[in-house]
Image (tube, rainbow, N blue to C red; front, side, top):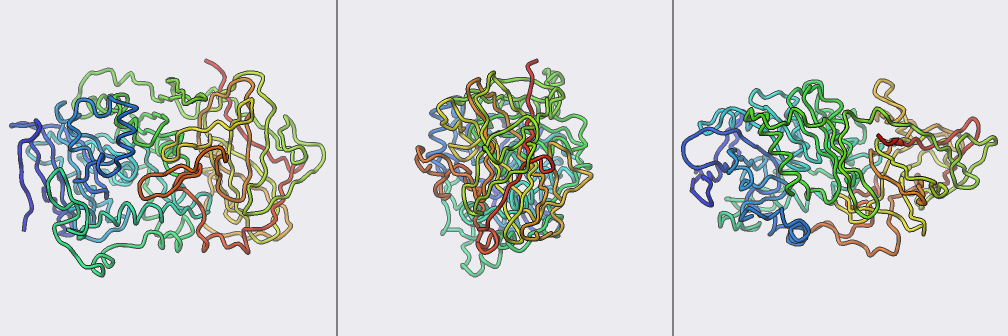
Length: 583
């Protein structure tokens, strides 16, 4: 049965559950929101698993209400009846002359099939959807991609396939390398997979039917129309968490099949990152921006919750100007848009917009701060004598603290650390936290993309994954090959280069910066309440859902060990900071 109807509603012609037949014969389902009457328009398209018939405000009531209360421009100018999670509001694009297309990804929502997140099969589906949208009678043949998180991440993959009708892409907080950006930080497995896949994707699986969510948009089942048995549903989806447990190297086919060839991405792109997205959402936006072959590409970096600025006037205006220029040929000044637009962070959730020409900034003063393992501070030169400090593997480790800064100091860019270490076992995990403290030694944290008390920047490395890719590594951004496990000899000293994800903070005079070298995930100070996380994600303690506590990946007999950290003339452990002088 072909489930399809079209109606004129709220100033839009809406085609519900439009069928898109892909190359293997499967029928995907899409909703099309377009201006009424005859005509052809550019297309804004998204493809993802979160249920195109679910309303954001009904699915995440608390988050939607808080966002609207704090940013009244978000709900303004829309009925918000068609605002789904992490995709654009059609009521803010259709009146401006766009057709908005939302596709439920294979196996989710109204689309049947087998769920296999970010697989090559999904990327091919996405390609076919773009080509379908570019050839409809209501389309002007130009398709732009837009969306947050999952609906941004898969854009890198499909753009590398170069669909002819794809003319622009807006990647809003979207990882690019699923191994390094999400699943195995520094080779350490992240259990976000457990917090996300079941509660957010499996719960939207096609075939839940009457056992699933009901839509106020259509008065029908979000994951229908059929209602399948539990056994049928289980057979129709991968076990994402188990796949991550089993595929521990970046060279496993599971990961290489999902890694885009950035040299093939030539379409104009806008990459929007979040400073506070540590654990998933900043790294890929920087790496994708730099690695893509596109000549016309822009980078924007902001703060606050991971969806907020996508929906504020600030974000919507940015998106529309970008798409108007490339999909409509409007002479709107976008050609003069600075290639890099940064919201520089200051303590107190204050952001200052600044325009730059490149990333990292050409005027960066790359500054080494040498670790003093005796005094747990920093020095401007390596220590003259070898010293060390010891901490336990599953502990809070040690924190190195600067003296109060004599003047305001801006840190904006990627950070790196070189550590000389030994372990009492054949491996060790390192969790690095770049931190800022006020004159009272209370820590400065921010509303992150998920967690309300996010530190300034995070980095990770498993010592047995210390091997560097010499071709891709830079002093300020080590790049690990993750292609083999090199076990440690207990007691032997090893040199580790550790990537700390890009960040920005203008540190006032009188404040201090610090580096924590830990054996477990960061947790914010006890004075903060344990934060209630997103719906179905439990509590957050500083790293949101991006924890590293899978017992199979971190057995205590290996990783709850004695770790020795060294500093001295031939073991010059240090922190490399991107200090930005004033313009």
